[in-house]
Length: 334
Image (cartoon, rainbow, N blue to C red; front, top):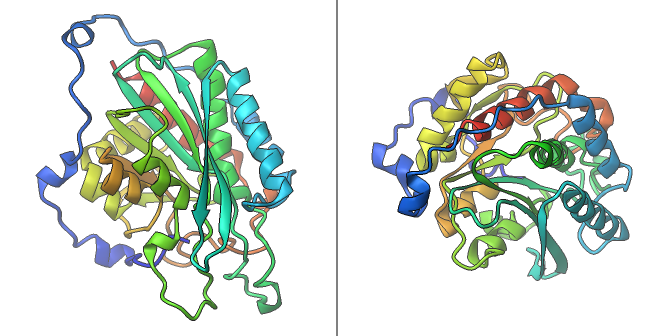
């Protein structure tokens, strides 16, 4: 998943980008009436890591959420119903998407919108599907086994479900769209003998970026959460995020430090990762960043794309660090 172009942390620190690139695809101008609105932003609520953990576990309990499976359908229904129960205006975007080997996937992007009438919007993304093959497992006999995906998939969705619950009780001043992408993790396995293309990955976000859920949709910026619940996670500043949305990276990492989570959000350049945000930036042209763990030893963690990606790797402290940072960012918008 997503690692075809990853750089070492040391090498990527040498990459520089023009300042203009950080503002590429900036959201459309708001109306004069909205720009002059002096309404104060709502106070940021406290993120509940126990609640987020329960939403992660609820997804894992369905089993691997692989497109075309019964577990996938059941979990998709659960996610849509949870967003509805938290007061969101929900849209289900169904699409037939073709995998790298020609397999047709019955995919479903799930969108929950708050203040849908507002032109001042922020988009929060995560993928909800899981990897069909544990092709990074140290036990080669398990390479054809599906991945449970507690961290890789369920953690980002669990954080955003808790964000949705908090928004229902105390909405921020801006509009927020919570978007769960499907078919992110169906890229070719390591054993595939054909060409490995970045377009094999992130099929749901590619589709949404071309055909958004609302005509003319735009947002100030987007934040993608991917694998945000693992123990000992460190989040470096991903290179494509810096290229397309450097000012948003700075906003989020500064807020993390101010919120007491600087040990998780490292203010140093990380690698370039093929992930959903890349296609949102390239196609939808919404400046979007990726919060994704990186370390020099295991890359995305020793349990990434293995059968070990279970609830045992989920750390409530990591969920809290990411969730509270995101809450503080969006509630600071005016």
